[in-house]
Length: 476
Image (tube, rainbow, N blue to C red; front, top):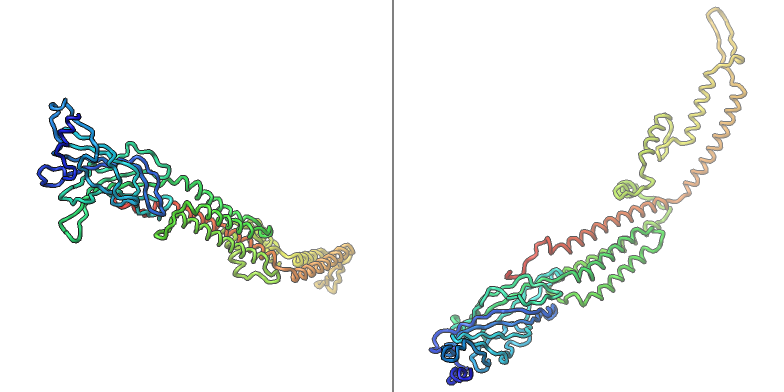
C-alpha cells in the first residue's frame, strides 16, 4: 500500500483537474442521503437537517494494475491529497461550503473516487403557512459548482430521489415525497456559460395531532360554553357574566398558543382564521344576550307590536319549538269549535271560548223559554165568548220558578261584578308576560342561529384543506 501511494502521488498535482489531456468536463455524480430533520423554523424560514451527499468522479491519473501491487483493488487516501470538486450548498443559511476535508476518500484501481461528506445542513426554505397546521412544505437543497462552469465540471444526479433508508422519524414533520433533478444557471453576461447544480427537494407534511389536542379541542370546548350561555334563563342574571368570562378565556388562550403559531404577514394561517371566527361569534353572542335581556326587561306598560307578536310569538316560536300563549294547541282549537257550534250567537273571547257572561245570558233565555212553554193547570183560565171563540191567558210562573229566577239573577249580578272587576284589573295589568315570551323566543332563535354559524364555520375552516382547492407544493 505504501508503494502504491508513492507510485500514485509521485508526480500528482491536486490543483489540476482530474483529467490527463484537459479536454472536456469532469463529470461529478452526487447523491443525497438524509438522516434526520432537526426542525423547520417558520419565523426565520430555515430547515436544519443531518445528511450526507455522496460524490463520485473519475481521475484518470490515479489508475494502477492490481496484480502489480499485491492485488489491491482500492485504497483509502486523505482528501487533501486529491483534487476535489468544489461543491457548495447554494441556498445555505449558515455556510455555503462546509469543510469536509477531514473525511477520507475511497480510491479504486480504475481511477474512480467515492467520497461521502456529511454533516448538519441549514438551508433556507420558503414557508407557506396558509393552511397551518394542515400545511405541506417543499424545501429544496441546492448543491452545485461554485468555481467551475459546466464545460469544466458538470454535476449530475445519480438518482431521481433522496435516499431515506436511514432516516429517523421526526415528531413534527413527515417526509412523504422526495425528488432530485439536474439544473443549470446561466449568467446574463455570458449566454453560453452556466453553472450546473442539482436540486434535492424534500416534501414535508406537518403532523397536526399536537395542534388538534392543544388548540382545536380547547377552542371547541369554549365554543360550547358560548352556546350554553343561551340555555340560562334571563332571570338568572349570569348570562352576560358567562359570555364575558368565556371571551376572557379565549384571550388568555390566544396568549398561550401565540408561540405555537408562526409569525408572518405573508399569509394568515388557517388556525388564526378559526380562532378569530370563534372569538367573533363569542362577541356576537354577548351582543345577542344584551338584546335578549333588553327585551326581557322592556317597559311593561308598552304593548308588543302586532307584527312582532305575529312574527316571533307565532311563526318563530313554531320554528324553534317554543310554546307561547299565542300558540293554540290542537285540543284548544277543537274545544273552541265545539263550543262555537253549541252556543250559537255567543261572543267568543280571544282564546276562542264562550264568555261566562254570555253563557249565563243564553242560559237565562233558555229558562224563560222553558217556563213559558209549560202551562200550569192551576193558573190557566179559558173564557168562551161563543161557540168558535176562545181566549187563552198565559200562565204565571210558580213560586219555585220565581225562586230559581231570583237566584239566577243574583248569580248574574255577582258574575257581572266579578267580570267588571277583572276587566278593570286587566286594564291596569302590564304586558311583561308578553315581553318575557318574546325574550324567550329570541333567546332560542339566537341559540340556533349561533349554533349553525359556529358549526358551519368550524367544519368549513378545519376541513377546507381536505376538501377545498388546496394547491400542492410546487414541483410535486
